[in-house]
Image 1: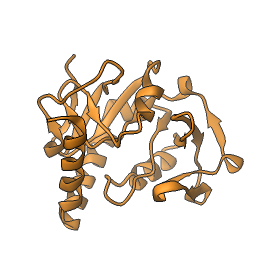
Image 2: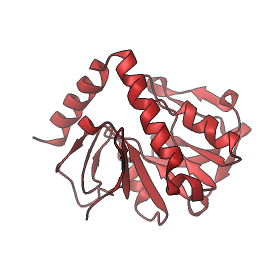
Image 3: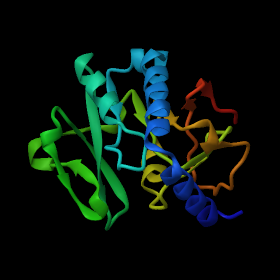
Image 4: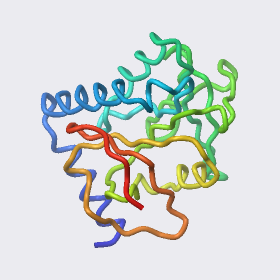
Amino acid sequence: MDKQSLRKQAIVLQKSLDKSEKQQIEKKLTFHLLQSSLWKTADTIGITIAQSNEWDTKPIIEAAWKEGKIVAVPKCHPSTKMMTFYSLTSFAQLEQVYFGLLEPIPEETEPVAKKEMDLIIVPGLLFDRRGYRIGFGGGYYDRFLADFTNETVALASSSQVKTEIPNDPYDIPVNHIITENGLFRTKR
């Protein structure tokens, strides 16, 4: 199956989860992330503001603030397909942009350099055990991660993790995946 078909299938699967099942999985994903050494050793965390059909990231962001970590949230630049991360200290520093996405307001936040981020939580729809992912199709994360040398992790239900998915030469795999069953290092 090609990436486009897999992407559509994954979106349908994600939207079909009932609310309580989704919340149960989110609690387990958040728990395993916050208990991990990846989290505990990271001072600056890169993370997106999730949309309603994605795993909720607000509890993770709130936990980071409570622990004194720096939270860096991306702003996408559609003309170049690039991202800039900004330090977020309050949800009031977000604005709604295209497709209903919430992104940092640059005038109210400070940019965070890529090398300053210890851990990036990479979003996606499907993953394989090697760490390759199918995202939403913009290629923003693959471009950003091409020269990123610190840790990456993805949050996914076990139903989102396949043995193998198609990948292209420019695809950048994540180092770790956390499911409701715990964390594992990807195999490459």
